[in-house]
Image (cartoon, rainbow, N blue to C red; front, side, top):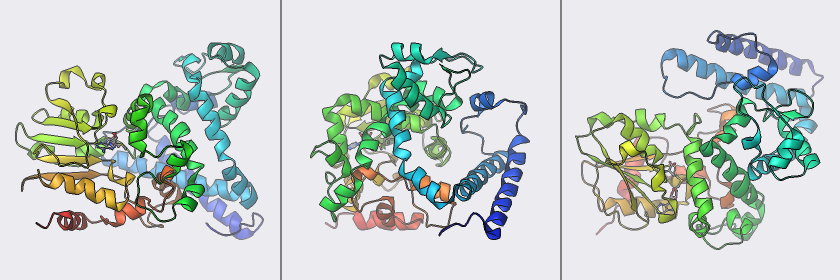
Length: 420
Ligand SMILES: C[S@@+](CC[C@H](N)C(=O)[O-])C[C@H]1O[C@@H](n2cnc3c(N)ncnc32)[C@H](O)[C@@H]1O
């Protein structure tokens, strides 16, 4: 729905009724798979399930479809219910919620709220503030904004408890992802227009909003290397993002015929961070060996699971230099979207010298679908492009290069081969 909305008009009321009917239908589908129908509002928030990967049967597909349609219909309905002015003003002030979440993660508030299973365990604002070394009145105000967004709740006046969403902040990996978004990503996003003004046309990795926000001339990951805690947090955050549908490791584990590789075959995970993607494949395919390559600042050997250490190892490697290892499969997972064409080509070219006729290059990344191919909620999620770049380079530009067809990718790689 676009253009001005007249809430009073019959047409708008009909649209809203149609959406309500879609919502009812989707909720009926979802509730048919649920055993608890009597939850109170607070309990409901506690019990809302996380996306659970691993179940790709047709029943699961029906439920996933119902959830996607439900989200789209609710989004549209909320837009109509708000009307244009309220809608615009709400979006214009969304940064206030982001800032409140930043406060909660910065001061580790979630960790001081009791993790009772039934959601009834709570802590007073005063005790929470004192344990977190913040001021009570300020903490109460900021927490109540998050509570209005279903992040924490107030079961009795003056006391805070967890919701299903706020509990996730206690997970070190998911909490790290939220900290990264509300810190580096949030700060950089506010410099988007200035970066576009300063570098209207550029293919440089250090001409980005992040460079302005952090007053650095270093590209993002080189900047992170100068403040290793940021690098560590980002790498943990990447593992935390894998708990979502979009980033799920299931796509990598199920999306390639790993069983067809010969015993002892080597898989290289280029820019593999803490090795979480390699470990997920290694768990299921014991005949394979993995090399996780990344910058030194990204490694944390402690993240490797003990029982996989004989098959998964780390190796320092800069992906702009020639690839030193010959392998059956080279993975580039969530790498290329970060770079303008010039650098994406460099990364791909660097791999070519070690590839053999039997080698495969596996790219897992976000590909932009044309507007209209999915609903607005799905489009929005896909278009959360890296604003810290602040340049004309977006997912669209990068993946125009590859197209939506695998054939285009093969042609692209061939075109990138040295012509000696
Ligand atoms: C968006 S993260 C993706 C991490 C991982 N592949 C995943 O799927 O979670 C990008 C990764 O590229 C790594 N990286 C950045 N520059 C690099 C370089 N020049 N050489 C090797 N790795 C690099 C970062 O350290 C980071 O781990």
